[in-house]
Image (cartoon, rainbow, N blue to C red; front, side, top):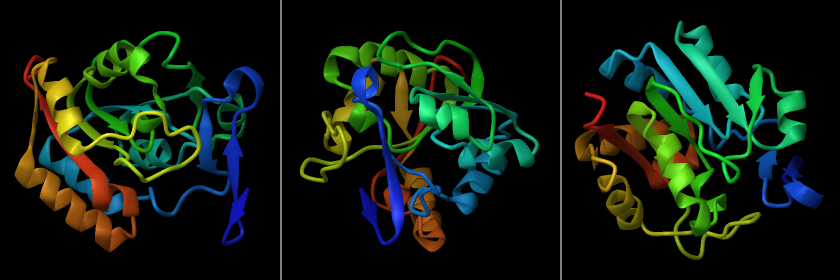
Length: 196
């Protein structure tokens, strides 16, 4: 499928639930102002990029001097990533490590609720979590968990994570200026009180 000349990458066969990203990189997810803000505001020295796609965010973090681990489930993306990525499907097992920041853009809506514990365990590897979510009716490739913001706030609260409301508003404003539509509309920034 193409939109405005951009080619979408979707998984096939056993990877049907993966993908939905843009082969050329999605300009609506590229948010350097947000990433710079979070790096400086929270003294981020390490990041886990969950669902790293083709590695544009991971590459940005790495070039900003941040130790970066990119994890991606779709074989095509791992093989074509501009930044080296580990191949792991979060529906099979969680990603377990300790980092300052977990970055997770345009991923959570693709994870079926039956795998929510894997997702939440992976998100809470960080002191801070920068994520997006799709709201009901947003639609997209394998969007099986479109939820309102409160759903994610409540689930992450079970893991001792709290929404940073003022910082969330700031990152949304910065994202809008970057043209990063998903972060501007549905970006969330959490603190993990178990890691502070």
